[in-house]
Image: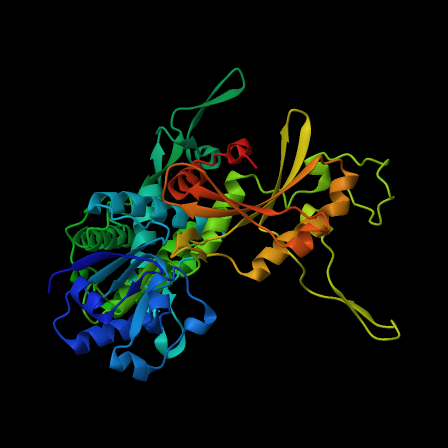
Length: 502
């Protein structure tokens, strides 16, 4: 069977017939097995097939999951809750983010998806995540061959092939002189009471080109390259192929022998990078699978929480200051602030620690226990213009928001809930004294949402009159070009807050 590779959009509603046609299934049984596998690993959800759901761009808790009986009767829609690449047998699913709404060409989709993959890689590295050798857990666990292949290839292109070195002792060579051996075993001529040695023992280190593990690594890299090339994923992941070996698996012995050799090598290898590489090769050999065999299980490279990636990108490009100390921020207290501050702000305390935790007390106040958690903003930053200091509270919201006229009525879709709005007001309230003490002139509160366009859009605002009345700043809405944000994140660049026109 040939490989079938298709793009789908995160959070779009697909009918069963659409999935059947898109991924070219000949039978209902194969389609059902495909859907069941995707649902098992949490990348596909089913919702009721209603007019409301057809227009939704997000999934609410009450939307999932509908019963199996409803699925059988065909009254449901299927939603990918994932961004990244999935392999299921010989079908490759490339899921791009939900804010990319236009009909793009295949070349444009590949270009955008390549950028998303780079973002996912950097996000994974920044969060200190490790290789996910397995997807799922328990009975639903599956070997994540795609993640292993990508790790092995990236490791190879960064560090090269696995090498074991051996030391060679030479006479009058170009390596380091072994003075102890030279003195003990060489003949010296004395001149003016100084010894002169006619033969010097030297030591040099050379790589063993015929080393078993070097050749095994080259074989594994070649196999990984062939599989990624067959899947037409090399361009998407920005990798070259490296077909550097003509060896076959049998050249290294049977599987049990190879695994035993790797295990023994691990016991004498103390280099951390080599240990990780050997363990990954062990996992690859032990599974004895090909990436796109029909029965090889399920692999993926991506996330079911792209909202967290969006938050990370926004925090980076707007220079989030939540985890910086007041000393690092170089803030100066204004002792003229009235009334006198109730809180003594510690110079080495982080900005995030300014918001106190809820305190639980009994009626007699004999017992007082602070909660483990409190309000935590997505990001806070400062902006100064014309001598005016602004305290800016951002919340990165991964929503497709729409404000429009429909049949003579004003309609809002894809918007954050009331809890998100009230929390954003409360962040201002929590920092209000701090803002006065350190002399900020203005406060700005803003939701940051992605758009597929090229420009920043001043989309409007959301306000709650009851909180507006006590002097809290209403929440502005800015749509940021998703591609530009990703590019700046990958390049470690900062966005000029002045462009937001807050």
